[in-house]
Structures are given as C-alpha cells and as structure tokens.
Amino acid sequence: MKLSELYNQRKSFYWDMPSTARGGLIFLVLAGVLTFIAGMVVGEETRTWGSLLFNLMFFFSIALGGVAFGNMQDLIGASWGRPIKRIHESFVAFLPVAVVLFIAFFACIKLDLFQAGKVYKWIADPQMIAAYHGKNVWLQADFMIVRDVIALLVILTLARWHWKKTTAADTVVLSGELEKAAIVGEQSRKALRHWSAPVLVAYAFLYSLLSFDLVMSLSPTWFSTLWGGLSFSIMMQTLFALTMILMFAFKGGPLGQFIQRQQFHDIGKLLFGFTAFYAYLAYSHVLTYWYTNIPEETSFFLTRMEQPWLKLLVAAPFVSFLVPFSLLVAKPAKWTAYLTIPVCCLVLAAQWVNYLLFVIPELADAATWIFPWIEFGVMLGFVGVFFLMFARSSRKVPLLCIGDPLLLTALSKH
Image (tube, rainbow, N blue to C red; front, side, top):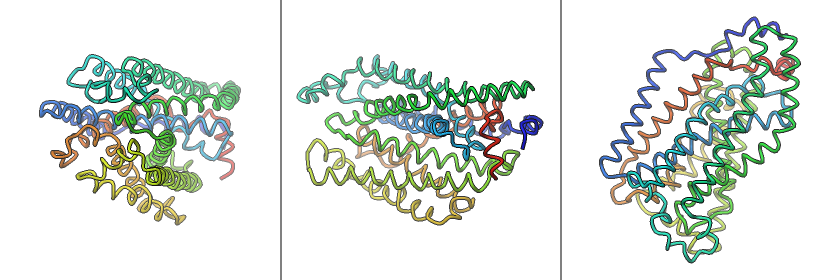
C-alpha cells in the first residue's frame, strides 16, 4: 500500500461516536457525580474520597500506559504495532482531565474540604509516623502535594510532547503534502527513537513516586519496595486488555482492514505475559511478608484478611491470574472475540477490585461496608469521562497513524 492510497481513505480513519453512545457516556458521568455527592451526604466522606482516588489512579494508569507503550515501540522501531498504535496512544486525551482532578483533590486535602484531610492518616495525626525516621520527613502534606503536582505536570508535558511528535506527519498528510509528510514522518521517527528512552525513565520514576505517595501512604506504617513494579504490571495488564477490546470494536469498520491476526496475537501475548508478571510480583509480596513476619509489613494483609475484605482477597488470585492465564494459553483465545473479550473484561474488573482492596479498607468502616455502591458509581463516572475524551480525540486525529513511515513497512509485511 502507498501513502497516496492512505490519503484517499483518510476520512474513514476518524471515529465519530454515535449520538446514542455519547448520550450514554454523559449519563454515566452524571451518575458518577451524583454518586460522589450522595456519598458525601450520607456521611461516608473518607470512603467517597477513597473511591475518587483509586478510580482516578486506575484510569490515569491506563492512559499513561497507552502513551508509554507508544514510546516503547518508538524506541525499538517496532513496526508490528503501527496499525493499532494510535488507538492506545489516544488514551492521552484523558491525562489533562486526570491532572486537573488530582490537583483539585490536593486542594481539598490542603483546605480540608469535606474531610479530605482525613484521607491520609498521617496528615490527620502526624504523631503516628514520628518514630519512623525518614517517613516523618518524607510524609508531610505540603511536601507531598508540591512534588506530586510537579510529577503530574512533567508527565503531562512529556505525554503531550509525544502526542505532538507522533501526529506531526499525520497533519501534513491530511493537508495533502505527501512528499513533505514523508520528510516530517522520518524526522519524527528519529526524534521519538532518540528521546523515548529518557522519557520512559522519567515515566517510571514519576509514576512510582505517585503510586508510593497516593496509594501506599494510605497505610503509612506499611511499606513495599515492590510497589512500583506491581503498579506497573497492573498498568500494562489493564492497558492491553482495554486495547484488545477496542481492537475488536474497530475490527468491523474501516480500520479492520489494517488490524490483522498478527496484532491480536501479539497484544494477546503481551496480556498473557503481564498477567504472569503481575502474579509473580503479587506472590512476592505475600511470600516475603510471610517469612519475615515484620508487624509493619504484615499489618497491611491482616487488615484485608478480615470481613468484608477477605472474600475479595480470596477471589483476587483467581480472577486476576489463574483464570485469565489459563484461558490465554491457547492461541485462538488471543484473537477469537467470544473468548478474548470476556477475558479482557475479567482482567479489567479484577484489577479494579484489586485497586479497591489497596485503598478502601484503609478508609471505609468494615462494619458498615456491604456493597461497593459508592466505588462502583464513581467508577461509572470515570468510564464516561475516559471514553468521551477518547472519542473527542478520535474526531480530531485519525485512529490510523497514516503519516508514520513504519506503518507502510508493517502493512507490506502482511
């Protein structure tokens, strides 16, 4: 296929969400907002803030993972993923919304609006970490807010830089300047290959920092040196699950001619691999805490080995690892819709529950927690925002990177 042929089909590569679907997503956003308000009204302030926090981290991770995976492909010059690269890179549209929500969350903590200052126990009671040298310096509200806001802004800046570079040639193609597009595309490819390595290092450091500060410090006397790696494994596992679902969704449209079994198989193998990687890191937590038996470490698990959290904890290894791992072993499970889509949905649901287990037991009253109506309602709001932003991006930029010089290489290999 030639660049001129892609140019002739350019209008078919945009995706305009049907009005009924857009209306449904707006309804989900309203449901999330109303659930958040209802949680505050019924006196579940800290639980409601926790629901906002872990859902925000969950979708922020997927959005960042989509951009980071694009950087990984640019770094090594991978051509196999070019037909689907723009799909997961478009998740970057959610990052500005996430950063605004994080900053609003920090502002509420600083001003202690609606008891937001009680979300982190060490802010409400600094004496609980006074004897933990290092933590009593690191865990200070103003210091945490400043460094995390800086980290978020740096991540957003790097992600927007990547988006601008990766779409630069597309813009030129859409203007009809095909010869210039080839030059711009090659320049962008070289720039992305040169700078993707330091950008990925920055993502790794800053995302780990945010995971430590925003999630792990909810239990301030507990610590885990594997937390950054575990968070990364969840990020990539959920990213590939959502990407697979969208690949099937677009398979029946104009993009379907470019999404071949090769892409499904490769993304499926990555999903399979990160499912095993997640299980390895999760088991490493349990094993090391068991044989060391240090109170500061085991307290995290002992809290979750009580009802109502125990039933979720017991189910976690099955729905997060054993079931998807077993089902994804077979090759057809990586490209057969009726097999693959349920597995991907299971992975997303399982990791959402795991994030719930990370956060909510530290904030909710176990005696009154029966059903996750606040957590689920807030999640619906984030689903609406995430896909509305994805659709907004897809209306402005084609879902096929038509100006990428490696796309033609990928298509010629089929």
